[in-house]
Image 1 (cartoon, helix red, strand yellow):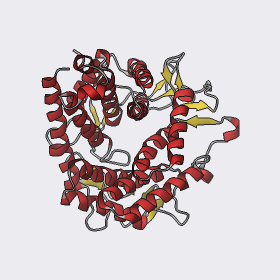
Image 2 (cartoon, helix red, strand yellow):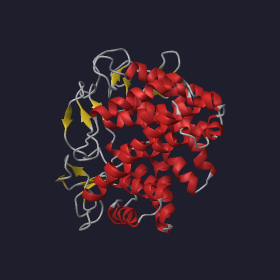
Image 3 (cartoon, rainbow, N blue to C red):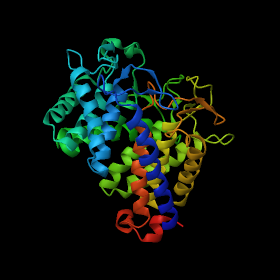
Image 4 (cartoon, rainbow, N blue to C red):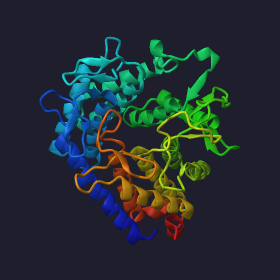
Length: 408
């Protein structure tokens, strides 16, 4: 990628972020009457459900706070971040300090705290909000929640667990994955060697249990020793999830200047995309079965926005740190698919859910699972990285000369 191409891509990413995606959520999402955010938004911003899902609330607090960190504390962004943070503070937790899954518009609980992922996103949100505003209560609550998660992580669903765990003790990749991201966020503002130890253990679990070097596969669920139960659950693959956790680990490897781990992550990304790419219709499958059997998930062949944007950034980051042309080629291939299929130039933002053939299946821009998070994060991080490739410190960042860093 030459500097001219990188600059053109940077402009497109930054323009989409600041002129399309952010304005859409600024305009339609804040609930100025009741607090928090309305996230169930149709293509044109109309609200179709006023329930408030804690993942979406926390992620939006994080994103508006991070925009302030990156571009300056604009008054409107701070107001919106505070609107969500105060809603979380007031209504988010039950009497035991666990974070609910969903509330009604007024903040009354609808779905109990049945796992710890609402808690994890609350840590991310409150930590970033505290770093921007200096609100000590937010950092205190982030730290308190983090340690509550550590106390619950052995049985994250507690009494809501459906499985008879002793008969098939499977470990899911989602928990060590979020521990890496959440831990890095918190440790950056609240240093604690115990947090760093948890990050290290989580990376080790991903690379030794979920990554199967012999089969060149990243498994979603494994036994505690890394074995693979021969069942649908045990054969489940999620290419987008794999790409997301791999770029989390790649960030850590780059900070440590661990060239061997950087190259290893690049190789694993290539295994993942070669298996996960739909050669017939383009795009990345949502789920797959490691042996090619019918996947457990009925929506397995849909093309989802988050799968693509997380993969997009993963390949750009891997290319930046290695200069390998194959990584660049995949980045450009995923980029072309995203802009051809997900972007909505008429109303702004991106569609989230496509059929296997790339047709829009759901017109919503936000819902129970789609919110103001994956897309703006990828656009923000991607634009910054493309800016560096276009000439800002690339030689020193890449660990090699300019030609090696930027490919051809």
